[in-house]
Image (cartoon, rainbow, N blue to C red):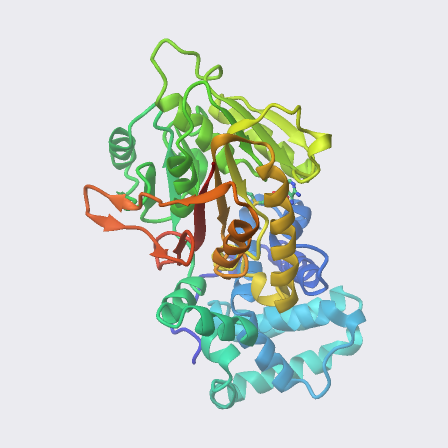
Amino acid sequence: MTFPDKKIVDNTTNGAPSIQHSARLVAIQVITGVLSQQGALSTQLARHQQDVSSEHIPLLKELCFGVCRQYPLLNSIALHLLSHPFEEKDTDLYATLLLGLYQLGYMNTPDHAAVHETVEACRSLKKDWATKLMNAVLRRYQREADEIIGQLEAMPSVEYNHPKWLVKRFVKHWPEHFEQIIEASNSHPPMCIRVNTSVVSRETYLENLIEKGIDATIGQASPSALYLRSAIKVTELPDFEKGFSSVQDESAQLAAHILAPRSGEKVLDACAAPGGKTGHLLEFAASHQASHQNANAILDLTAVELEPWRLEKIEANLERIGLMANLQCADASELSTWWDGQAFDKILLDAPCSATGVIRRNPDIKINRKPADIDELSAIQKHIIDQVWQTLKPSGYLLYATCSLMPEENEQQIAGFLATHDDAIEVPLNTLNPDLQTEWGVPAQHGRQLFPTLKGHDGFYYCLLKKQ
Ligand SMILES: C[S@@+](CC[C@H](N)C(=O)[O-])C[C@H]1O[C@@H](n2cnc3c(N)ncnc32)[C@H](O)[C@@H]1O
C-alpha cells in the first residue's frame, strides 16, 4: 500500500487564495458533518456547496469524495500520528487533518501549501491552540510516510481500503468475487447514460455523441446503456434538456427491461426517488406503444416516496423527460395512506438498502455504515415487501431490487418471503444478451446478483416474483 504516484491536479493553487481557502473550509464542514453522522455525503454537499463559487465545486467534490474514498487508510494514519484522538467537540479538527493528509498523499498541492492551508484552517475554525499540533503531525507524516504506511498495511482495512467488517463479509459471502468487488468499490465510477429509446435509438444517439466529439461505448447488459469514455457535464449531452438521455448506471437500467411495463398496465414504483427508474419505466412503455398513443396516457404509474425533498427530484426528472406519473409522498408500507384499493399489474420495489454495491458512488459508506444496519435494513425491506405484495393483482409481477451485496437483504430476504407467501413464485430472469451471447450477474439462491465492475456497471440484485 502506497500513495499513488500520479496525483490529482489541484488547479487552484495558483488562484485567488481566499477562494481556494474557502473551498477547503467548506470541505471541512462537509467532512465534519459526515464524521458526526449528520447525514450522507451527498446531503452534506448539497447543503454546503452553495458557499463555494461554481469554479471551485470540482475541488470541493474532489476533496470530500477523496477523503471518504481513502478514509480507512487516512484514518489509520491519523490515529497512528496522534497521541490522543481528538475529542468529539473537535471533530472539525479531525476532518481538517484528514483533508491535509489527503492533499499530501493524493493531490498535487505542493506539500508546503497543503501543510500551510491545514494549519491556517485551524485559525479559521478559531482553534488556534491546534496549529502547532497540526503542523507537527503533518510534518512528521511528510518525513515518515513510507515507514508509517509500511507499519499499517498489514491491517485488512488499510490493505483493502474498506472497513474491516465489510472486508470480512465480502470474503465470507463472495470469496470468488472479493478482489473484483474491492477493486471496483475503490475506483471512480464511470459515467453511464440511459438513452430514451422512445424518442431516439441507442445507435443514433451514439452517433450524435461521436459527432460532438464525445467518445462512448455501448453497455453489454442493458440495451439502453452507453458509457462515456470520460465524464462530462450533462448539459453537454445531445438534447439532454429535451429528455433524450439521463444519467443512470447500467445495472439500475435493467429494472425497466425486466419488468417491461406495457400499454394500459397499472404499475407501482414503491420506493421511487430520485426517480431514475420511474422515468425509465415510462420511457420503456412509451417506446413499446402503438404510434398513435399519447405517451402519457399509456402507463398508469404510481410512484411512492417517503421523503418529500426527494419526491421533488422525481418531479424534476419527469418534467425534463416530459412524462407523468401519479406521485405520492408516503410510506409505501402504510397502504391506507396512499393506496386506492385498485390492484397493480406490476410492482417495482427498489428497496432502501445498505448500498454496498455502490460504495464508489457513496464512499461515505466506508465511514458510517455499521454491521447492525444490515439487520435493520433487512427488517424494513421485509415489512415493505410484505405490505406492497397485497396491492399486486393475481398473475401480477413484483420485481424486488437493491443495490446491496449483502445476502441478508437479497437472496435470504426473498427466501424468507417465499417461505411465508404460498401465493408467490420466483420467475427466472432472462439475463442473456443475444448479440454478445453474454449473461449479466451470477445466479443467487433466489434471483441474480451483479457485482460492481471496474469501468462498468454497479453492484445490484434483482429477483422477479409472480403472484399465483
Ligand atoms: C434505493 S432508493 C430508490 C431509487 C429509485 N428507485 C431510483 O431508481 O431513482 C430508495 C428510496 O426509497 C425511499 N424510501 C425508504 N423507505 C421508504 C418507504 N417506507 N416508503 C417509500 N419510500 C421509501 C428512500 O427515501 C429512497 O428515496
